[in-house]
Image 1 (cartoon, rainbow, N blue to C red):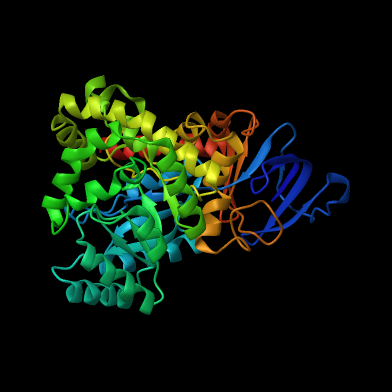
Image 2 (cartoon, one colour):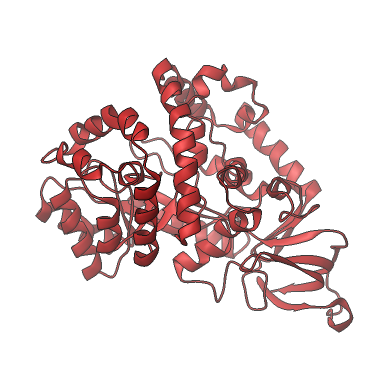
Length: 438
């Protein structure tokens, strides 16, 4: 494939380079050169990039493809939605041993061209444990099963969390997920937890009264710990302190802990007050069991949930802006398919919300491309449009550096070296909708 005379977006430095001709062969970018210098192989399929913009494939760093609690089939119905939106890679946040085997099969199918789906670049298995020793055993079991990282949730007691971090380090596995509700955000970062999801414990750390909140959660665990945290949220939000937030952000930047804010999730918490989601044209893409789940969860929302969501957004916005200014790594993630969070589409919404929070458009785009590659240690092979990188690409009709919403103006996707045109994307979406009618 030769994409000719295209403007290449340098996502690492936030600039457009062009025009360039980008040549893809064998699933890799083999050349990026000015058009007059490009040696296009005979027989290459040419795609005109004149007036268009080329970015790396987008990455959603927080998704759930498996339904372990409800024991429903995997959410492979979401695959065409991801790819149609230029999301060529995802990080799976809650797998188990059987799920890891399924992921390996998906990866093999993708490599041999038998599957159109995003690559699962990493998959985590949860560790919790009723005691520190049991938590450590769960880490070892997850490592033996082939987990790429250990996922932790908010209800993990501090002692168990410390055992998880130590056991994971012994097995050379990263720890990611929620910072437990009884653990300081900066302490978690200093101890080596690689990422924090949903700004968990960031609100407390930016309140100026973090020690007070943590002291009230001492010796709690599981549902009791999370219930206590939730009961305090309104007061935590009201106690936001800009100075404390700046100090927290500087400490996180030094520790190198990445943040996956999932702002789109917080923004969707008031969905129930906006009417039934059935009016959304994307509703038709959901599998029947997923529609039932969304309906059930939305029915459980209360009026105070929407009120709290509206209070949360301006604080989240200030926290993310402060962290970005301090140099904290920001990664795009969505928690799809939570209610209102449509696979693929939600990543574009997340980038737009990052810009609304104060990030320049190029930083929001970087959070969905180069920054995930940095986090995963794969910048030599992924995350940019450069020779030797994977041929996961998105061709846009307009410049995303001028307006981040232009990432939605997709002309074509290159998935593992295979070209998917706009016409093919539309046909794929139509087929996805028809599949859910059956």
